[in-house]
Image 1 (cartoon, helix red, strand yellow):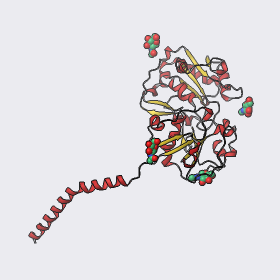
Image 2 (cartoon, helix red, strand yellow; image 1 turned 30 degrees about the vertical axis):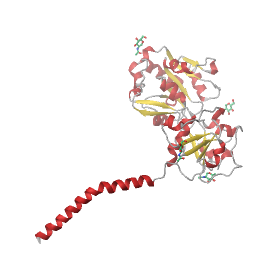
Image 3 (cartoon, helix red, strand yellow; image 1 turned 90 degrees about the vertical axis):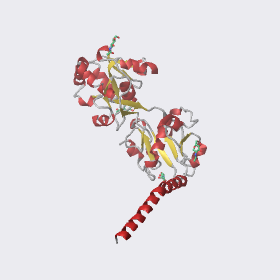
Length: 344
Ligand SMILES: *[C@@H]1O[C@H](CO)[C@@H](O)[C@H](O)[C@H]1NC(C)=O
Ligand SMILES: *[C@@H]1O[C@H](CO)[C@@H](O)[C@H](O)[C@H]1NC(C)=O
Ligand SMILES: *[C@@H]1O[C@H](CO)[C@@H](O)[C@H](O)[C@H]1NC(C)=O
Ligand SMILES: *[C@@H]1O[C@H](CO)[C@@H](O)[C@H](O)[C@H]1NC(C)=O
């Protein structure tokens, strides 16, 4: 009984030994088989039907790999690629003003997705209604777009820049504005606020345009920057916050979506929201208090030690985001009420 048992044990043991010797081989051939069985990665072709605002950029080389480290993503503006493109992107402005038109006369490939693209707030998206039931995906600054492409993002980790302390700034607040319309809320905020605090105004409206290379240095010299959006709309936070204020290291005074939206996307304790104050006098009181109290002022800049801002302004980088998102996008979808979505 014992002898038999031990012989069986011995057999089992040698079998195990054999298996453990073989298994790397078995595993290896399984792996290579698997690798070879996998089809080579398919390229996605993104066709941009027309360039936003009539300004084109080079698409030569592998732009998504070079600019965004995204592979297998081919951007093209060559309309002859239409029958085989995986995705076709239409920027709203040119559809709206008639500079370009949808290729409704061409057969629409069944697996192709059409993308509606706009970085403008609802007031600037005219004639959306006629586009109902046409598009499969949306692409905009909105967080609930299929392909969200915000003007800026907050990332973990400190940036490299040091900013001047409060005492070294010779300007209290500044504002850059080109399209000034008396009935805009931001203009009303400016008009009432300037009765209480000095505001240096730059840009087309004031005939004091700032060249690109003077923008951030000029704003850096100010304690505050008025990041007032031209309209208050869902998630609409433009480069007026991300670049002008944050990248210049001035404290933004914001007008736009709700405080909770800013809290969701901006660094902690990084802005002053107009809607938190009863009126311009109360807001000015707060600004004067923060300006006079070195510690209170620096509290608003502390996030620079733990967070940094990334902005995205290049249309090509934005288009590459489609490939990044593609595997997770709903394969069958239609915006039957695009107008309703845009204005919500
Ligand atoms: C994908 O595109 C690249 C760059 O244009 C090309 O070199 C490659 O052959 C393409 N791959 C496939 C599978 O079509
Ligand atoms: C303020 O400016 C002075 C003189 O230009 C400079 O020596 C000092 O380092 C600056 N301080 C800060 C905090 O930037
Ligand atoms: C503001 O004025 C423009 C014309 O200048 C007009 O089209 C628009 O409806 C007005 N907006 C509001 C909110 O009154
Ligand atoms: C895209 O939208 C069109 C227009 O409504 C629709 O006919 C088509 O089935 C949709 N395609 C996909 C892949 O969802």
